[in-house]
Amino acid sequence: MGWTSPQNSAARYHRGWTGPGRSDIIRHLVITIDPFEKLSSLAYGAAVSVAEIMAASSAHITLIVDDQFCDLVNVGELDPDQVTFPVNQYYPLDSYPAAAARLLSHRGYLSTDTLAVVTEYVEASPTVVPASFMGVPIVAGGWVYGELFLTRGEGEPGFTGEDLELAMDLATVLGGRIPGVLAMEDEAAGEP
Image (cartoon, rainbow, N blue to C red; front, side, top):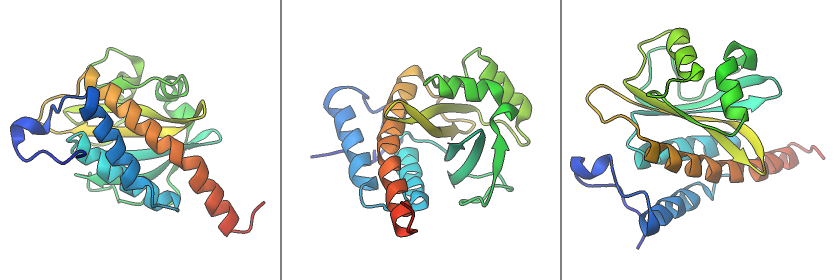
């Protein structure tokens, strides 16, 4: 039958991330993002879908381009200075060294972790830090393409290790689409 968005608040935050339920969720994301042939629409579609699946207040997709982070899309409840499609929002990987190291080693993190990446994010955030957050690498073919970052606000349950595992899987589904979409964009631009 497939995955459908939960209809009540009790089911919103925990949906049984194992077995057939997990397969349905992953299939839902695959079908949702399959039609997109441009990186911006792929990222937007994936961010909206993952935010819904994970009951996240916001979802953010950042790419890693050479030695820089590049904010690509923000959806959901955004800070006043955030826009859905940031333009040329690049910053060096070494401006967030713990995050870069964690992501490039194919590992995610939760706001409840006692890790340097969490401390780094809390100290560097120019706005109010969300009640709960997590970041996971977007990976394809062993290559880290970027980060999927999710938040939940006050009064919402915090993300769990189980949520992190599912987010890793969902980010990998997104990662699997990125090389093909980039190739289509290069071909459309006339690049070899």
